[in-house]
Image 1 (cartoon, rainbow, N blue to C red):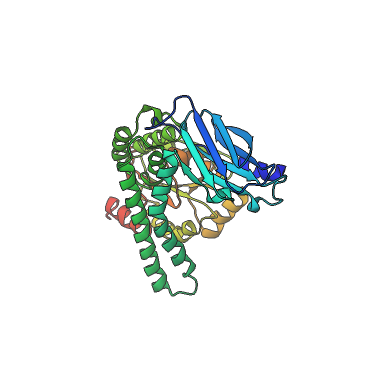
Image 2 (cartoon, one colour; image 1 turned 60 degrees about the vertical axis):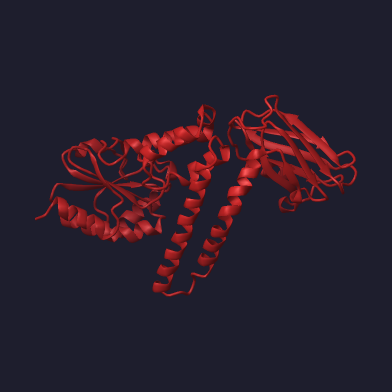
Length: 376
C-alpha cells in the first residue's frame, strides 16, 4: 500500500486561486457519505500545493467521513477510499475520486464506489466538467481518426489530417468561448494557458485578454505567472523585435555567440535528432543553405537533444554543414525557452541588424523567402 500511495502522491498536480461566489474564507469543509461502506473503511485526501504534498485521513463511521482545512487556492485533489481493513495490492484497483478542492462547503455522496460519487459545492469541479464535456467529443473523434490511419494511402492520410485539424480548431474555438464567458475562473485560466497561446500566438491580444479576464489573485498564481512570462517572452521574439542574443556550446565544446554573426542574414533553426518532422525538413534547409551560403547568409542549428552522440550522428547523417549548438537539456534548452519554442521544427530569420523578420519557414517557403532577399 505504501507503493500505491507513493504513486498517487507523485501524480498529484497543483492548481491555483481566485475568490469565488460561495467561497468560505475560513477554509474548506468536505462531508462525505458512502451508503454501502464496510466497517474499518478509511478515506484519504491528498493534494499538492506550493510544491508540498498534503495528506489527511478520516475513518468512515456509519458511512460518513469529513475533512477540514484551508487552501491558498483551488487544487486538483483526490480522495482514496479503503474498503474494510486493507487497500488493494495494485494501483489500478484503487477506488479514487478526483476533484478540485477549494475553500467552500462540499458534499460528496456515493452508494458504494467513490469513483461514482456526486460532488456539490465545488465551482471549479463543475466548471472543469462543463468544459470537458464540450471538448471530449472532438477529442474522441481525433483519437478514432488516428487509430484508422494505418494502411491508408498518402492522399487518404492527408485528408485525414485535414479532418483532424478541423476538430483541433473546434476544440480551440470551444475553449475560447468558455474562457471568454468565465472571467475570474481558475479553470478558465488553465484553459487559457493550454489553448490561447499556441505556436505563433499574438502576445498583444493574449495580454489584453489575460488582463481583462483575470484579477490580481489569479494572475499571481503559478499558472498565472507562467502565462505572464510566456506572453513577455513572445513579445520579445515578435517580428520586428531584436533577436535575443545567446551563447551555447558547439559539438566541439566551443562557445558560440549569436551576435558574432551580426551583419549577416541568419536562420536560427530549432530541431532535434529524435524529431522525425525535423529530419524530414532538413533536405529543404540544406537546399536553401547551399544556394545562399555565399550571399551573406548563415544558419545556426539549435538542437533540443539530450544525447550528444545522437545529435552529432544526425548532423553527419543528414549532411548539415552549418553552425550547430546545444546545451543538451532537451525541451529545457535555454535558447528554446528564450524564443518561446514549444514544438520543433521551428525557425527564426534574422536580418543583418539583428531584427527578426520572419518565422517558421517550412519546406520551399525558406528558399522562396531567401530569393526575395537575394534576388540575383
